[in-house]
Length: 164
Image (cartoon, rainbow, N blue to C red):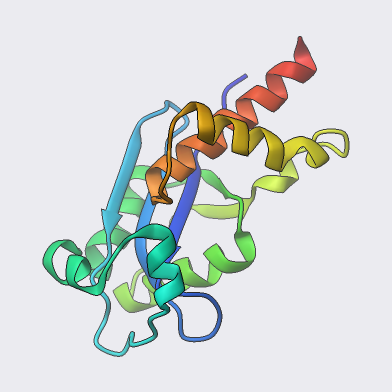
């Protein structure tokens, strides 16, 4: 089974005013892409509890973040025409829209909810398989491309166990 591209976004916090600070994906071919996003001048929201989860500081973004337009161009170039999946569509979609709005570019790929790929029988197992894969990969921090890879591997394991 060909696994789809999976995208993940780390953000400044949750809810109103939050914005993307790191975008990463694992392509259908398994290749990883990830980049930090330099906050726009009017992107002021910052949640220290989100920072403690992903470990990305404002200073790190100022030093290594790339402009929103650069990130949007990279995503469009690498994902054009594809349907890309995420596990937090309700949060990731607005963050991605905010990135593309700041870049003043149209998004050239579709973002959809990964849960649409799971059957009713598979859905209850999802979190447990994700946690198992995360432990096996020895990932202790949440970063966008590694989280996307974990989600893709978990999806593969669930689908493989069904076909086995």
